[in-house]
Amino acid sequence: MNCVICNEVITADPYGWEGGCNAEPIRKGKCCHDCDQTVVIPYRIKLMLNEKTKEGTDNVGNSKTKSG
Ligand SMILES: [Zn+2]
Image (cartoon, rainbow, N blue to C red; front, top):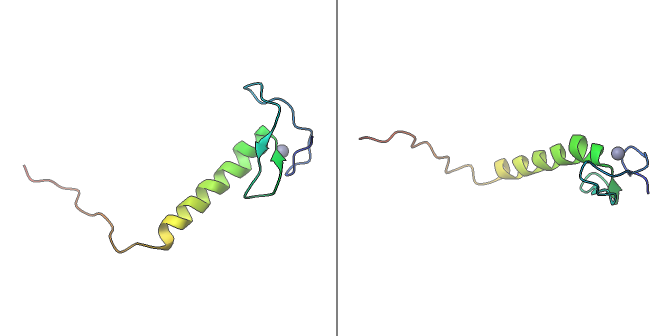
């Protein structure tokens, strides 16, 4: 099986798992552990942050100080 991102043969990751990682949302299919760490996961985090900032920015918590 080859990685759909870098096209290298997928070998076992540090945990011994040889099935590869889910390459979505970058691509459909499986990617190697390397691409998962360096490409897919950062991209997923980016998407998540984007979704958070897209809507509901009315109520930004700005009550940090507490009297007491
Ligand atoms: Zn790869």
